[in-house]
Image (cartoon, rainbow, N blue to C red):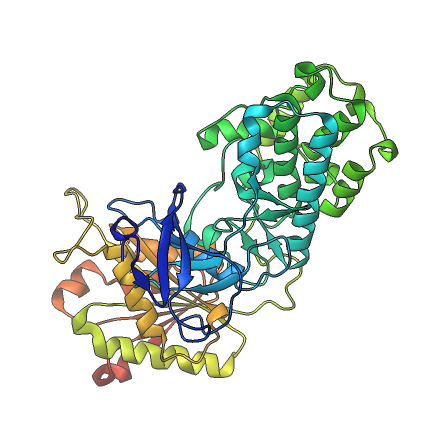
Length: 480
């Protein structure tokens, strides 16, 4: 099912598409209703609220982050509850990708941008509602990491946060960090530590909310509209103009709050969104510092010192964030999905199953490498018009059904590379895999001469490697 093939009146898993809504950057949206009594459709649960179906765009050449973001959002939304997030109904899989959630009727913050600058009291009220919403999701182990006006909806006397495709749940695999190098986010709102690859600090959301407050109060974005990661890095050393530089009507207490949110070092920001919400709701109790009276940005000396430190800054080491109860080993299953490797796939599943029997809390990451040509352009669709990347994800899920592992402890990844062994090794190094289980089809003169993928992985991987062969070659299995 492709997003562009949907039509009004179409029924998908018991949901009828009623009205098409404005599309987003990575998905189409439809108001939907049930075609039968509650409990008769795929969701199997009652829902007495309006619903919307979100269908990711999977067009030719679509960025793989669309697929990964869909997987992230359905994992996280299913675990969130409360008034500050849309209620989750159900989700499809890779064969029929969609998410059905509550339709949040309200006012998007994006619609207020043309009315800026807003009165200080209105800016504070909006900010407090959004901060309380952030505090609620943070307490549920989620960092939004893509907070911006289009992802905040004002409903009654509260804010509702939407679009969790780039988010981080500190008790679930961070698929975004595992699959994409460098910073991921929206340029004007991304926090300095996100630019360095740190996705584990809830104060990143406080920074993004500070950007929103700055825009609402001044009509200007504190860092402009940078499009490239190289431009994002400037916020590691360059502070914004004080809000009162653009709008003299910004009171000192509001400038104090906004600039504290926008501090480069997370330790200088509000410790929690709840503390930020308190200041926004009680402006007369805001403790004023030099931030409140500033009229210009920092001088060249302070900026130069920060620039020098930023030169040596490195991405944060990818690890489980604070709050997880324990650190479990990560097992990578590097799977050959070729039709002729069916017996090998069975043997690989048996080997992973034996490891899980001894380490029941382990995480499993299932990997397949879609080999690309070095010179020629590879087709974006196969002969039957299917997206190869998406098809491999479906096949990985089918392979993994035989494993006795909880769905929140197994993930699926397809990489495109001219060098499959290098792709496996790099991924294992990036996410600190503890044990790789990889298949080897067999030996041949050509393989011995050129070297096999499994042999290269054994030689270069920074962890334990178990090589599995088809049943008739079990005696040749090896570990390194």
